[in-house]
Length: 147
Image (tube, rainbow, N blue to C red; front, top):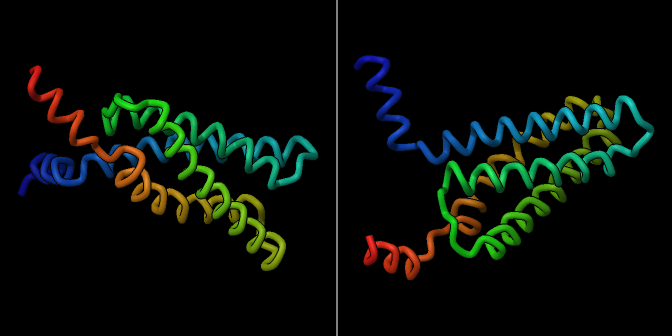
């Protein structure tokens, strides 16, 4: 099988996950850079830095996934609230992981943050796919009637 055919086949089958991963990498990088900047160049506590960096990452992720990945535009406020709830749950999980790795295992803050990102991104994909951006079947049927 040619490489281009393989890529097209994989994208057709896993396109939403791949694009979520790309968006996730971009927003996780933004989250990581903000966290690192705040912890390296200020005296802000690492949990406070994590809250700020995660909040910005969640907002960017919602906007990008809504427009380019899931392409769901109905119930924007409700979806944003659910997405932020999933994101805040991820923030909680991330903070627990950071606390455990930094305070208990005495790992480096940067390594700890990278480790927490991996766990949280995978968990949030499934929650967002099946909860935040779950297609509203009534809206979908109504849109199909008018096309």
